[in-house]
Image (cartoon, rainbow, N blue to C red):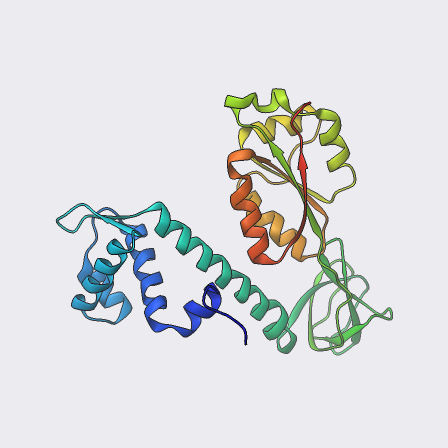
Length: 269
């Protein structure tokens, strides 16, 4: 028998109580410190008394701190709980939209040939992008409109499996400025890691400076964590140069998303 006691996805989707706790924590985090229980009740479709009881439980569980007179804030424990569950829901949503629902809708691809509406085309992944042409591919569908080479084209009635494998992330830890920052990064090791990867992201100014010191501008800085994960889902090999204080949380995010990764420590010997 599978033990789902600590499975965030199972808990949130199948327990109305836990789903409500999750929503209340999100509402408190969004409006803290001044929290109006009446407004939360209206949003969730429950009574103010129920919201009050939930908040009391959350305070008892150490997820919310109360400061009196309707003033609350989500604690570190509460934030961690919300993040774990949100990441599980995001991963599940990605599975549903990309692997379950998309096969029955219209896919968007780049036309690798001149295509006419109604043509049977092959669909394949290249460089993280979906393409359609008249070659022999494992997946085929029907073009929904005319498209010249290089234009976007819709493909419906997709059959077969798109030849595609997820990429991998090289996670490169660099020290915070208190521990030397970019000055303590081995440029030789950094160049070895990023050589040949498709996408490079940076998290933290120390990471950004380290990349620029070896002549590489990061492809992503703001939103790099999620951007790298999305790129990996599209089959790209990626590297993320990340400051050490963000390192552990990012690894947890990769584990939740089911992404393959390799760790590299760039600290100079």
